[in-house]
Length: 306
Image 1 (tube, rainbow, N blue to C red):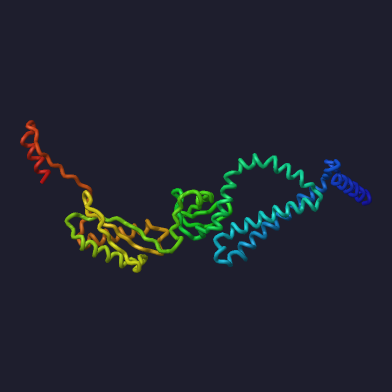
Image 2: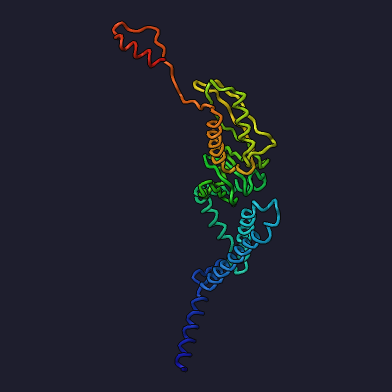
């Protein structure tokens, strides 16, 4: 038993000696393995503290404020990294680490890292701009770079957009600052949609308008105020062209579903009221018939024309 205790004491003394060993020992710098270990342990504790604080801020504090709810991830992340930076220098000073060497190291790496992290820095700055200007918020329906969906989260570097196909797209924040962005929900939850409809030239436009308004008035997701409208837009090549103009609050995220429902009902009602939906057609008129055509060919052409 005494031999085991002596052996453990010997190992402990070796560990203490190793931790006290200064692998950098000069007049201005003295760094031991023990100081490095203390520094690393302190950094781990600092990181765990900052990360837990970030989660608490998001779940229990920031979500209580309506104006900060959409930007809770950004605010919490900024506070987390601020604590990490300040804590890093406090730990370094408390352990007697010479910060001048760290400044020199950061300065030498700054140029190279700055070039490599240029896009990340641009996105972080864009995240700050979005936070202060607030052109977006969680729940908004946006369209940017052919991506259409609902904002799920606004982070310090990127924003998560959920498409109608239930796909989460991570969009860098710089896209929302430098590119054209359509925010369908920025001012009001109501959105106006336009859907084209064509009927045959033999139909009465007033009758078509009456039938279309009847269809719109019976649809539960179309608002009465502002009221729906029917525009007579054009004399097309094969049809009289109308445009259905409707407002909705409940189907702003699924305009194609609304369009499909209306078109199903329009087809049903047009069949019920015998309103003809035209198809493209071309009439061919011959001013002169070549002499080499046979009489049968002429009669065939006249018959097909009639």
